[in-house]
Image (cartoon, rainbow, N blue to C red; front, side):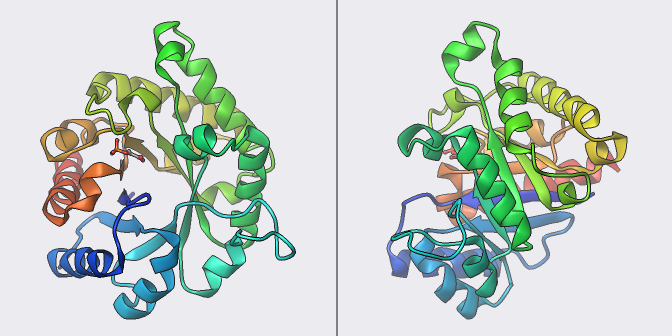
Amino acid sequence: MRNIVTGNWKSNKLWDEADKLMSELVTGIQSSGNTEVMVAPPTPFLAALQSKYNDQISLASQQCSANGEGAFTGEHTASMLKSIGVTSVLIGHSERRESFGETDEAVASKMERTLEAGLRAILCCGENLDERDAGNHFERVLGQLSHALKNVDAAGMEQVVIAYEPIWAIGTGRTASAAQAQEMHATIRQHLSTLYNETVASSTRILYGGSCKPSNALEIFTQPDVNGGLIGGASLNSSDFLAIVAASNEAISKAV
Ligand code: PEP
């Protein structure tokens, strides 16, 4: 199974900067080894990056509408993303949940729209610090997953990647320890075997996200249930992001 390393640029960079970063990544990733490299730039840049770099690095959208086509000013549908060559959509990122009121219900609808459009969903989940300190982190994360996946069957899971992102580690510089990441990833995998079956559990990629950087990526990626990363801050700089991709390749080669 190939790892996935995805850069989430969030609301950062103007066009010239985005173009430069993409060009550096395309040049730097001559052979991505056993890692699929993907970036999620700001929405206004998706179409231009797709036509300029033409699938050299696959593109994800940072979100999509919970609805289909229609009178929904400001929204973009999963089908629109598919029509310009985007391959994947981040769904349920904690910043969308916390700052834009994205509910579990909306996340479940976005999952449906994304899979219907034939795109891959990168489903984000994660607990906040209070939930972790109270020991409710497993319940919180598994609850988010059960909700988001309620209308996804085992066949649909082929289009789903899960990203575990503890909120207390996002953009804080405070990373989950490799042991904490592994413990949660193994619990998520176990949950998938309960919701679906062993095949789905073992074949679903589970990425770690939260202050992942060149200095800690290898240790996290070598955990048996970690299949790559969702990278925020460190994806804004090509050398850091390329070093994280290299760490993913090294982790895979150690596992073989
Ligand atoms: C993210 O927002 O998905 C993320 C992981 O951010 P950072 O790497 O900056 O913590």
